[in-house]
Length: 305
Image 1 (cartoon, rainbow, N blue to C red):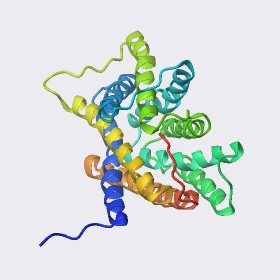
Image 2 (cartoon, helix red, strand yellow):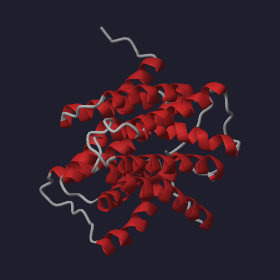
Image 3 (cartoon, one colour):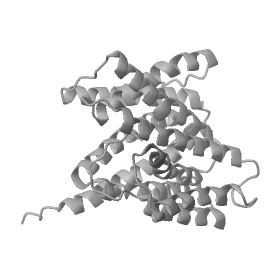
Image 4 (cartoon, helix red, strand yellow):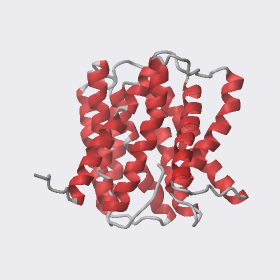
């Protein structure tokens, strides 16, 4: 007997659970790679190279070309800097020093900060509840930074701020795309352009600093982590774009909860991380902030943040 077809909502929940939990493991993969000596600059280079290659092949398969006029190249440059080169470098430096679970909570600031940037630009409308959500996001960060017993060791607060700065970059990029996105591009042409530009920008930096991370054969743990991070980011983002198109941004935004909570879960499973009550409280407050800031309409949106 044939199995009953899944509804759109059921498919959506399966995508959220699968893609969100897979995306959440990238925090642990980043920590594994940096703990084993991979330099953040070299890791950022590979995210641009491998991510760009994957999206380029995908665009070839769907027979979509990448516009290359001067205005497009400037657009890709800004997106590449704000969406990959700068935040990925900050993210990998933070991953080298913070528990994976803590980093996953910090990166949950992206949708909250995106809204905070969008309001003064006239791209979104404020409500009391959504402004409370923004406040809760920053309360969660204060809960992790302020108390001396919140983080596992003294002196880690500055690295947490690296994660906050990375989230701010993604938030600014999201709004830049909303303001300046060329009419004849879509999420995957933008993604390809920003990855390629990021690789071009990072290559001389990595060469000058001697921070290249070689991908040798046979593949070791570092190499597998580097490749897995790039492919997971592209694949999970592709599923997210599909979900936005199929179900709208309100439903798709719920993936943020799974990414954050699974990031904490994977940190416990892989590293045996134990968090203070302050960190667990920050997780609850951050998730509450996400719930309040979620989109208020089901209009289809596109974003590479």
